[in-house]
Length: 471
Image 1: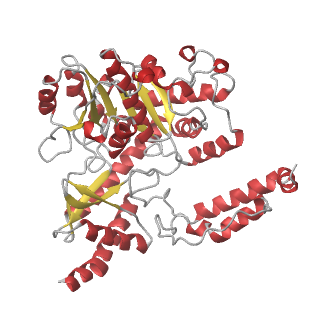
Image 2 (image 1 turned 60 degrees about the horizontal axis):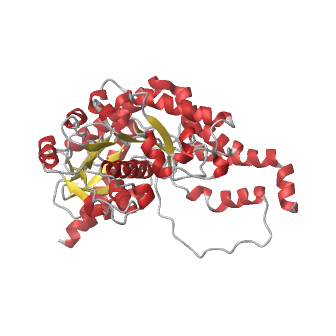
Image 3 (image 1 turned 180 degrees about the vertical axis):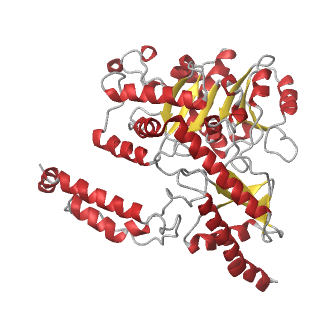
């Protein structure tokens, strides 16, 4: 055995202690570390010919990089829809690497039982029927990809075509109807060979991002072949919800696959305050819900649920003699693109066991209260204006004066450089805007109050001055 590898094997306790020390130093600085930062790239060092050993590498990382990491897991990271990691999920994630389970095979370890139990918990948390088959994937993009791939197979079979065996040559054309799909839907369509142009944009309700169901029905009336309808449960800019019950009712009259992208909006089911927003979700053929968003577990983790397990296995089955009959196995390798995968269910199991349904009701409600508080400050400010009502945990706003996306980006770069909060730019109905997404288990009213103060001060100090100079 390599000498340094042997030394590390004999010093494992010390290596783990040093790792814990670095982690502890990070958590001790969570109130002061910037939630985002600009790291200037430099020349890439060469691979060492002779290794340094784990302890030396830990010290090197601590000296050169630890203080340059962003606190994106902290309470004032308002970019994207990103949760942090609850204490229990961090414990679970560390153990994922410790046990390093082979997740092929369905009963050769307790890991597979824990995974199935976690998916059972999640169906209960989200109010999904027990008949749904669930799998873990890397994120909402892959969850949407898996669902659309299964939908493609279903539509092909409706027309006597087997996509999984015959490929795309001679395949029937497939259309995807949606009002405000997430960009990952279009990316998935591209990867599947459907093409981004297969998206049929259905009009939204006035001043909303939610689909006009009457317009959707008018489109469905004209179709002679089945289509895919992507219903959105929580749009990215304003957390708007399509009427899932009404779309579900249309399935009684028209032949289409109903996919619900509920990447973070699915968490509305956690609390009586918002559960009506996802009423009708059980009409779906497939559902996407993300875990590294509002479940607050480490990247990467999301779930995909479907009522069509037998169709999904036709797409993703891994056929090899030593693996057995895929139709008789519950192994997730036969339901997702991955054969090799980490035991990513364990952090979710830890956090669900640790905090239960009550804990997640608290997180969702506190985050939404914080978003309402920020929205109230913005609506009363002299510098900013709300572009849409605050429905749950995302606040979409802009400057009161007309602006450009470049101005928004310049302004947010200055906010980032302040070092206390982080927001992302967006476009809402063509208007350059700012998004504040609040989904971290630690975030409270004080955090958004500080965030608003930073926005206001940076606007007065930086953006307003530059604007005046340009004029």
